[in-house]
Image (cartoon, rainbow, N blue to C red; front, side):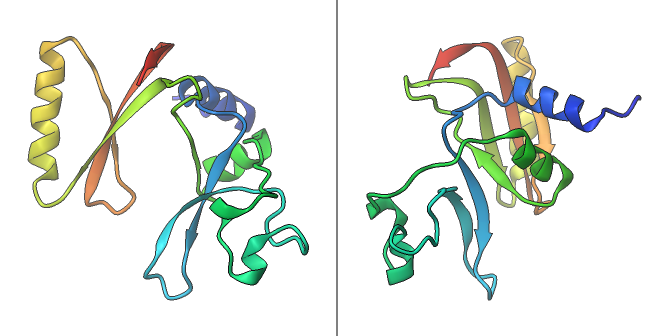
Length: 149
């Protein structure tokens, strides 16, 4: 199989993972590794006089939040594994171009096999991806047109 260039990878990603373009999230982890998650990327984060975090405030309460759009530079960082970003698949009009299901827990392998079997009965073909942890997987469906969520 021919290897894709960085620009081709970005184009493929953008074609499959179409979500909100006005905001995206960055993965974070606490220093001790006990807490982790995703938070929207804000252009004013840690800026004096703008960011509530400087005074132990919460982003959700900040009147100065200004979300950053997901650009090709950030996509290249994500695709190369340098950073982990997430997009918001639910568009502001309540539609989406893709759907993901998450299988975890001790029976995830049995569950995904059952899921795929049922999908095939309805002529659906999920794309299966192993979770980063190795202890689960995701089943993805990509749509040509937006569907109501």
